[in-house]
Image (cartoon, rainbow, N blue to C red):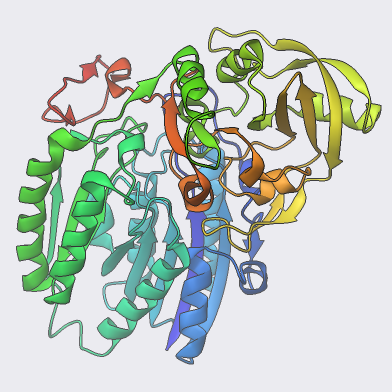
Length: 499
């Protein structure tokens, strides 16, 4: 079988200022920069990415691959019209030039919003379907936070969605997509068209409550596993609530008769679980008070503070300083904060050298009612930002975070980077000489992904709401495009304004 493969990923936070340009898809960060043609295969090897898992499974089956292009950009604002058009057009051109194929696999996110294209993933899938026609198989993998549209379902033969958050199964999802493709290739599509069912859950789930490690989402995913054991082909996406689009929110997709029955069962379960999608949120000062009670008590390991609203993985700028300021003011011994995105501070530290004492203004370059935090810091370590991820989420990823530094302010150490990146791998701290396991407090710019690598060492995990673009309380947002019947989990009303 000859299969064309490609990827175009972006999780769009439509509530943040600014747009995402073409250059953001070219530059590497934790993921590779833009890869074209044959370099896709070598450039994604040994990484926890869907495209990696699909390629491995395809090669094991002896399929002939026609690699087109693969790119991603860190979560941020609307993808610029020109960037979306250029990448989409290039993908379509390469697919057309590749010649006849038996199938197409796309590694997508599912929550991309571009200027003029609110359902950017659905629009791309429709263009691919129109080009290849009805008889070529089309399969796409999606992120757990995808906002699934009817267009996405109708344009494809199958959508395959991550099953975990933290996303430790990204490569596994690519392998599942290959398995689904192989199953469909064994039968005549004209004789046995696949029945599809899509149900949109009528409430938004806050990001911090979407973790599949525990709570209602763990119960949901366990039920999906049970249904699949009985033959129900079903997929679930929790949705990305920071994308103000019609299709925002959770979705359940079923394939075949058993899948359609499973969709009904899962819809009923979600209705039962709705009131459980809640999270305790602490202010920075409340978190500091909680730390003082915990770090001197029984147990071992660090207390982890998730600086969720400044999570770069959801479009946060990675440079707000509310939590950092509270930790410094309290002079919490053994506290480590990271990763703060501040190229200027990193550059100043590198010029001064290890051991130097520098006066520096940290972070707060993007507003949110904050001003940079003026401190006198000791440069404890410097690094080039090039290292390999070792945790379950970023396993094998070759980070390129630019110049990095470890700065000590009193008893608090701050890890600074030149490229914005979510703190979800211990290697990000070890790269500048910090052993996370030995910290008393870890303040991480992350929401849930940190749990993949840090969860096992944590004495406790607390969620902090300091300023940032990843708004944790969805009732604080004003939506313009969302469907009228949608609420926030638990029955809370959504603020709507005219577009």
